[in-house]
Image (cartoon, rainbow, N blue to C red; front, side):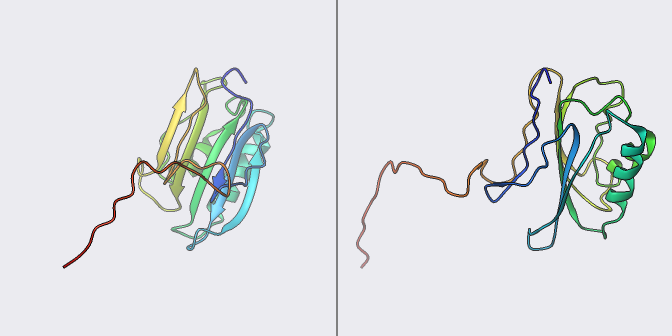
Length: 151
């Protein structure tokens, strides 16, 4: 909450995050299509950690999973959830890291350390793959246009 009581997950400019306390996760198919989006309140209950671990392990290998933490996710985060995250290549373990932010993109079956991830104690963790767009359309200025003739 001190670093941002939100968890946005933008895919092609659309926010698919449930934006609830704890881990907010989105599973993506081969073509980048959203397969499912869920939130697990690993602050509120140990059961949420077990449910999150089962959800993460329920996807076939090479499924892309992206995640972001809203408010707090460490209080009841347990070994089963941390191990399931590590099976995506995530190395950050938020246990004993009260209200840290965490954002990641991992792949089912990836080796440890293969996920792209950020975590931070004092500011929202931000991670982008491609341009960091938070809308379906983007605009920008043109600095120069050059016309050339060819021989």
